[in-house]
Image 1: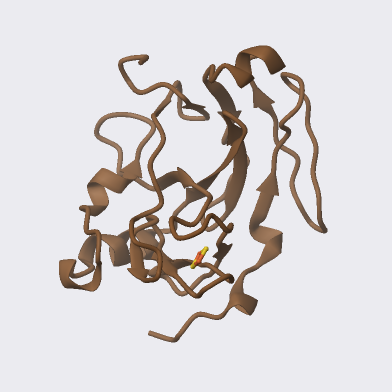
Image 2: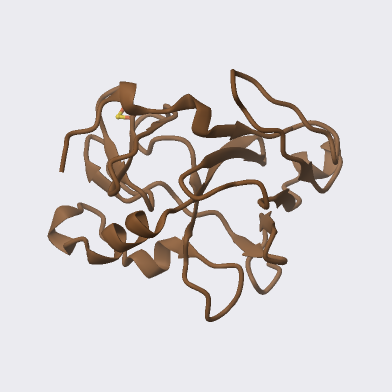
Length: 185
Ligand code: FES
């Protein structure tokens, strides 16, 4: 396995979605793809209302950044290689081990979990890690060198814990809801 570098991060793989009015779209950077963030108005978002995200345009290997409660969250569509690497990883390689199945989401029961939905702030001091593509290692934090696998599990500190999972559910094969779990909590 080759060591990841910050330069490995491929900015083109990040899709930035709107944090403004419902249904609005926006993008930054070169080569980004426009996708919509649907859901509540600004006041409702500030109060923590769930947000709906159209994930239909997120191809395997890509990550978008969505905003909920004013904080960024990664939504990563894993490749089959990345899922296999996460599933087969040894527990001893993690300082805050959780099973890959716990970390991965699927649009419906019975479907393979191929989605990572995690907070986009490093659990050390809050920097935003950059995406890397080694198959297993998924993010590198440029501030102090922490590394996370493709499910957001910390594999090298100083980050003390995994990237947190928000409450979320899939309203359909193409719509992710952040801010409410399957019970609607
Ligand atoms: S903020 Fe990420 S390693 Fe320090």
